[in-house]
Length: 104
Image 1 (cartoon, rainbow, N blue to C red):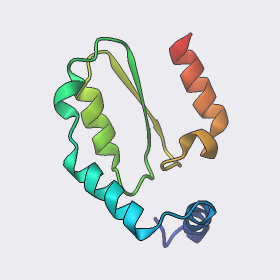
Image 2: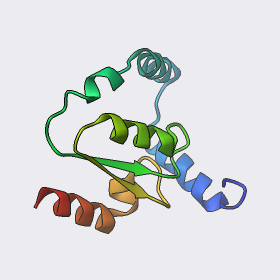
Image 3: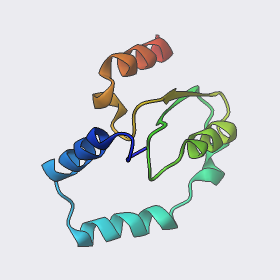
Image 4: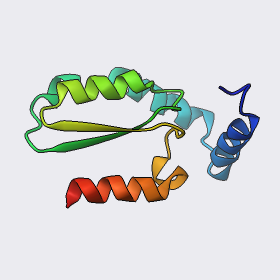
C-alpha cells in the first residue's frame, strides 16, 4: 500500500510531526498496549455498541475490529476503507453520518 500511495505515507509522517511523541512516551504507550487485554470484558457490555475501524490502520488490522464486534453483544462494525486511525478527521462527513445514524 505504501509503495502504491506515497502521498499517504507523507501525510502520516506530517500528522505525526504535528505533535511528536518522544521515545520514552512511545515505549510506555506500546508497553501498556501490549500488556492490557480487555477482550474478556467485551461480553459484559449490554448496550448497543458502534465500532469504527479504518481498514488502512497499520498497527491494528481490520481483523481486530471484527474480533471486538464478535465478542461484544449488540455490536455493529463500520469500516472506513480508505482511512487509518484518524477516521473522524480523514473522512469527517462519513464519520458524522455513521455516528448520527447510530445515535438517532
